[in-house]
Amino acid sequence: MNIKNKIKIIVNGKQMQITPKFSLKSLIIKLKMPLNKIAIELNKEIIDKRKISKTQLKKGDKIEIVHFIGGG
Amino acid sequence: MIDKKFKIANKIFKSRLIVGTGKYKSFSECAKAIKTSGADIVTVAVRRVNISNKNKARLMDYIDPKKITYLPNTAGCFTAEDAIRTLRLAREIGGWKLVKLEVLGDKKNLFPEMIETLRSTELLTKEGFKVMVYCNDDPLMAKRLENAGAVAIMPLAAPIGSGLGIQNKVNIRIIRKQTKLPLIIDAGIGQASDATIAMELGCDGVLINTAIAKARDPIQMAEAMKLAVISGRKSFLSGRIIPNLFGSASTTSKGII
Image (cartoon, rainbow over all chains, first blue to last red; front, side):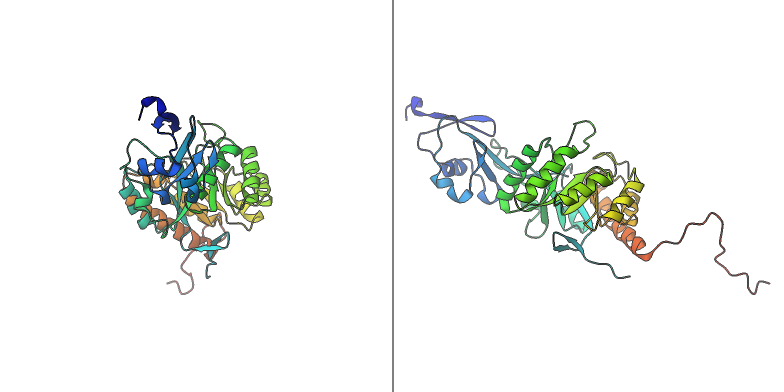
């Protein structure tokens, strides 16, 4: 794959490069995230975890992946 | 006197002690403290996953949300919009509707920003959340939160993490008199006797994080808090004697030699 074909996205504030036609599900698998322990936001919209395979990522997308941590 | 069940949003909980999961040295210490405390509700926060260290331990691996009720909080939120965004995400992780709302006004005192807190309570309640509200010890604001649909009123004893104990007993007593909602002291507990005092004032429960997590021995402090809450509740239910300025002998003078 030519490097020029890669697209840039932002995941949890960090830039990442993915190939075109990359789905949100592919991203979650690539990052090895346990789906039952996270929530995902795409451009500030919460994404239904059942629909991530149908969600295609595009240039400039901002993704937030969150989980529970200790808190008071 | 038999105690009534501790109920929040129609769900019964065994323990009147709610424990926070922040500030522990490790997840295993946190899990052990929770077990010792007997708490069946723990507060948790929503934050970004560390994507560069995928193997980092997760809270959910140590504290099973099927066994302990997770109470997602909005720690670090300063506006209603931040709080709503955070709790929507929490709901998405696993369907949580019972939440702890905490909208702060400034980073130094960590006092609740009550205008935003009230607005958030209204909005979240409309969205179907069951909102337990961290608030100031102001009876008028407590009433407004109740009218806005809060399922529990959670006034501070003192600033978060300060360990100063209950600073305004009078206000807590007034709030107790005016509301039938669960009244839970949230923030400012320093030692076991503070928790007992909260319960003796008639509160339904106490939420403690720092006083346990940062104690020299968090596990033993968890037990102390458990006993303190039970003790304070029993003391409240038993009805204290009327304080008297003068002495009253415990031994009768009848038959004295």
